[in-house]
Amino acid sequence: MQNPLLDFTGLPRFTDIRPDHVGPAIDQLLAENRALIARLADSPEVPTWTNFVEPLEDANERLSRAWGQVSHLHSVLDSPELREAYNARLPEVTQYYAELGQHDGLYAKFKAIAASEGYAWLNPTRKKVIDNELRDFRLGGAELPDDQKARFMEIQEALAKLSAKFEENLLDATNAYARYVEDESMLAGLPADAIEAAREAAAKDGKPGWKFTLRAPSYIPVMQFCDHRGLREEMYKAYVTRASEFPPDGDKGEAKWDNTELIKEIVKLRREAAQLLGYKNYAEVSLVPKMAKQPAEVLDFLNQLAKRAKPFAERDMRELREFAASELGLAEPAAWDLAWVSEKLRVARYAFSEQEVKEYFPEPRVLAGLFRLIETLYGLEIRPTPAPVWDADVQFYSIHDRAGQLVGQFYLDLYARETKRGGAWMDDAICRRKKGEAIQNPVAYLTCNFSRPVGVTPEGGKKPALFTHDEVITLFHEFGHGLHH
Image 1: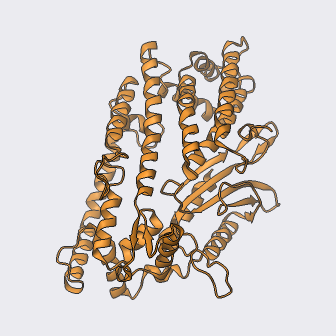
Image 2 (image 1 turned 180 degrees about the horizontal axis):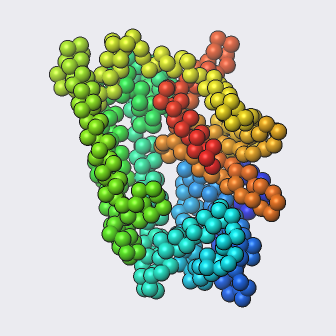
Image 3 (image 1 turned 90 degrees about the vertical axis):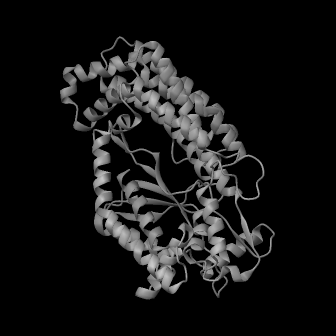
């Protein structure tokens, strides 16, 4: 059977991909790409878009798609076996891209295209591709002397390993914490759906009572609604010290997921790489492809924003403290009290609770509203579509224009789980490209960490997930990234 990571005929075959596919597929693609690069660099032909840029893009896209599937699964369906397979090939993939960015032959070919008469006849999109390639060669160290090129490559490989380890430590530290509660009085103030989710989590572990974790759907309701100050304090401290030098309560050993030294090393290596390229610091390198051109511009913007916002923040904090003292008996609210006090103040002042708003945002209604908005604004129809997925809760959709033509597709992975890193993001599964006379339609991953459905309806079916207003904003935000893609 063909390795699914080497099948580029359609959508990723997520139901077929196994960790033992990673090594052979990536090794084969790296070998094929290096052979192609050697042929392109040594070719006596005058480089053009057709005979040089397109074949190089085709090869790199195949590698990007295969490695992208592995990276995506590493982020959303982590396992010891997949982590081992990912980390085993991460240095090789990083080395390949570092070699690519420093390849004298390829750099010379791109410069030749930019200097040729044909460059003026390229459309703006293709000109931008050439310009960006030249910029990226310079940022990749192509103009460095050989000894500095080698050091720059070492730094890129080290940074890739450190960044991956950072994410793994954060995920492991988050998953390591679990607070089981058997005293029901400690749950006072918590919404019914949060209590039910905690009960189901404890039952899944074969434990009585309720289980709370540091994943957002469990942690945020405790901070915002739970009246038990001790539980809020414990979970807050556990959350803000994840993957730090402070081991979890009760752990008498070393903090094995401590990211402190990793952060220091990442900062140090980024600075060294920037200085090799002739910049003062990493911030200057980061801004090269962005609108702001100097770190001072960014700092000035942030300082001006802080200056204008600070009086309002101080006013809000005074109101919170006054309310906490007069109505809640808290003379000096701590960090783990602020979300709870804010919710109490909101209810007292406006007779309005975040929890009540969730009743208006069941998942089916939110998605239907989002899709209607997209149809109204852009004339696009979004249809659920069967596709291989990595988890039973993942949904897949196709986007069609007014003529019924397919223009894009996306995966929607909404719920938090132990194998998924925190946060929300959009990433590309397949990029949009013109290939000959045809268009390769884009496919995006839209990933969130929302509360999953809990409880059953009177008819025995599962209740829909209820989203907070912030979660609805997050979903629309990520969908906007997907539309850009």
